[in-house]
Structure formats: structure tokens, C-alpha cells
Figure 1 (cartoon, rainbow, N blue to C red):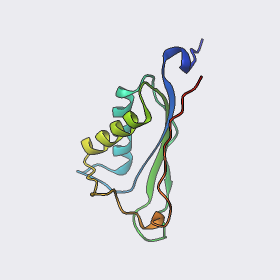
Figure 2 (cartoon, rainbow, N blue to C red):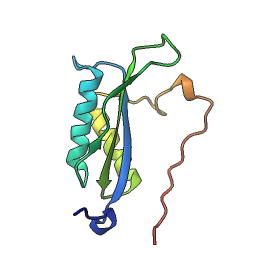
Figure 3 (tube, rainbow, N blue to C red):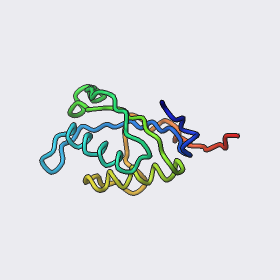
Length: 121
């Protein structure tokens, strides 16, 4: 019998993973799987993972293809807590963020994403 997320005091979270660069001798798919395992240790339930899939870098020829996946899991905490955990996992796996965030040429003209929390009654 499945217990609902609300019964456990957790929220359902969905996270997308992706990368296209090797680091410290690890391929992107190995880094992604390691990141998922690290997130699973912090989540309130086992991760339900999609399969790994590959997408070309955009624009064509701009870099190696990406390895992508998604995960669903229960999270006890705020969206900000989850984002902090994700940034910690990235740092633990060797990602260095630039001041002001990473510059991506494919989304420079877009407005930043706003995350809003609302109380559920």
C-alpha cells in the first residue's frame, strides 16, 4: 500500500540532471549517476529515475552531446533547501560556479526563472 506524500510530511520533487563534460576521469553519465546516488541519500524516499538519454549540444557542433535524466522523489524541506543541496552535490562532484551564475549563450535573452512556494491548505 502506498502512503501519500502528504501523510509523510514531504513534498514530491522532480529534478532534471544533465551534463556533457568529463571530470577527473569520469564520463558525464558516471557523474550523473553519482549525483543521483548522493541526492538519494538526502531525499525522504528512494529516487524514481528515468533512463539516461543523450541530446546534441545546441547549436550543433558547439560541444559534446549531453547525457540527461530526471528523478522524482519525496523531499522534506523547502525548495530553497533542495536547491542548496543540489548546489552542494554539484560542488562535491567538482563543478565550480562562476560569480553571478554560469553564462549560457542559449538562454541569455530569457528572463530568470522565479520559484514561488505556496501554502497548501
